[in-house]
Amino acid sequence: MTEMVGYNGPIYMTHPTKAICPILLDDYRRISVERRGEQNFFTAEMIHRCMRKVKCVYLHQAVRVDDEIEIQAFYAGHVLGAAIFHIKVGDRSLLYTGDYNMTPDRHLGAAWVPRCRPDLLITETTYATTIRDSKRAREREFLEKVHSRLDAGGKVLIPVFALGRAQELCILLETYWERMNLSFPIFFSAGMAEKATEFYKLFISWTSQKIKETFVERNMFDFKHVKHLTPEAVDQPGPMVVFATPGMLHAGQSLHIFRKWAPDPKNMVIIPGYCVSGTVGYKILNGVKRLEFDKQILEVCMRVEYLSFSAHADARGIMQLISQCRPGHVLLVHGEASKMEFLKSRIECEAGLECSMPANGEIALIPTRPRFEVVASVDLLKKTISENSILRKAKDKQSLFKAGVVVRADESRGILMSREAALASVGLKEHAVLFTSVHAFASTEPIETLLKRAMTLCLVLVPKEKIDTEDSGLALFKRIFIDFESPPTKKGEQNDILLRVTFTLQDEDMGTKIFSKLRDAFTRT
Image (cartoon, rainbow, N blue to C red; front, top):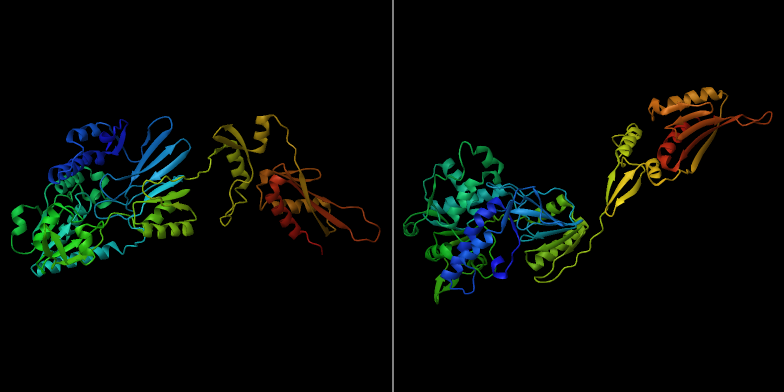
């Protein structure tokens, strides 16, 4: 594509993708040009020129493309080398998933992204409404179907794509054959799938945790029971399992074998993944029993089974990714319109996010909110932690910060300071509005005794070093003042004491707590 349209910029890939990509492209070129006779197609030389433009990225590595654009790759599961890209353009960002899988399997791990809060998440929706059952249950059902068909003397065809499911299912059968001590032959079509398996051996660090842990003792991709498929093997009598490409039975070796085995009811074909409408795989999964090839009718008598081992995220996985990265907006691609519509409604309802699903070629305008980064000053952090550490309880879910002033540093950044530091930075003097809460109660105790009692009560809420004793009362944090007054009374009238707690608006929470505690202690009798 790059050479056909004259693109001369860089192409970013992970290391496994760069290794596999030219082989996949050349295989696609040969099938399209040499077998189908398509014209105006890219050449082998174009593939070489394209690959010279590739720059490799490591997972989690932040790569600066230019002054405005930065990209970062995260593990996507799905197939070897697959990555989810976080792209920043100035102060805007988007997360582009490509194909991904949120569930680990036998040969690859699960996709993972940090809570990057992109303005936009662009996600695939191949299985927008599907909730897949337990993978272990599917594996058990798969093995039972294969084993029972072989015991009955039949052949089992498993159409797969070269990269991904072929390797996973080979590991599954290899493990089962060893455990059950089986001797039925398993064949793996040569060519692309064989080459792809060699790359899995090379890039072990991209595989599942179990494969990495056992790699020193044994490489799981060095199969003992799986052999290379030869043309003669397809025609030999007796039961066997054959993995052949491609996965949708639309061409190639898998379709060739299917046409040979389809008339025999003892045989079985297991479709392990998604099939596009119009392909042979799609037709037989939807019950078609008569197919036309080269003006001849083929009767499909073999058993047809579908067991999803697809490496795409299901509906639960898509919602999990949304929860994980916390986007501002979601855009759905790569799915069926009716199912995408259902998922769109679910995202809007459950996640409370705006969601779009533009048609192919349609321009989507996504509104974003301007970003302004605020950094808290060290002085404010120290002060806030000091003042609130005693008051904060485990059950208290309020924010640690009670007050602060944002001073603009530049166009996109501000510094959160204490009000004193903020005033000093702009050369202003502080003016404060004071609030006084008053409580009257009857008492015959002297003011000095009442102050000592108040001091004891305050120590439950405030560290002793933050309380100063003054002639007329107590000062907490030098900003909250407590005093008692005994106003003059007429002869014979009851002597009331006035409790006063004075505080600023910034100290309202703490001042109110202290006043409530003192008021409850000094009640009218």
